[in-house]
Length: 148
Image (cartoon, rainbow, N blue to C red; front, side, top):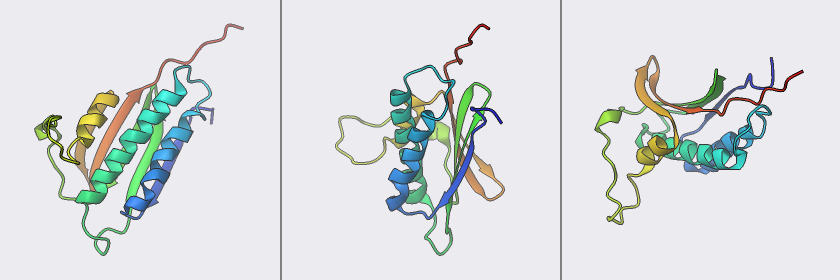
C-alpha cells in the first residue's frame, strides 16, 4: 500500500455531536496525502465543510435512532479523485430537483447541497441495498513527479 492508498470508513450515531469529528477527519486526511501538491489547507477546509453539510442533511432526514443506529462515511482515493460517500437510511430525494437557495431569504437551512455542488467536482445521490448514498468526488491535483 502506498501513501495515497487511503480507505477510511467510519460509522457514527445520527447525532449532531459527531459533525465536527467527521468533518475534521477529512481535513486531517489531506495532510496525510503526501503526494498532493495543491493547497492542502483550502482543500481540507472545503472537505470539512462538505462532509459536515452532508452529515447534517443525513442526520436531519434519517429515521429516528431506534430505526437507524449509525450513519456511515467512506473516504478513499479512486485514481486522481478523492471520493467521499455518506450512507443514510432516509426516504431519499432527487438530486436534480434540488433548487439553488434564495440568498435573499434569511432561512437558516437549505444551502447544504448547493455548497456541496459548488465545492466538489461531481455529486451523485442514489439508492443502495441498505439505504442511500451521497457520493462526492474531488479531482486531486496530479502529484509532482520527481525525475531520477
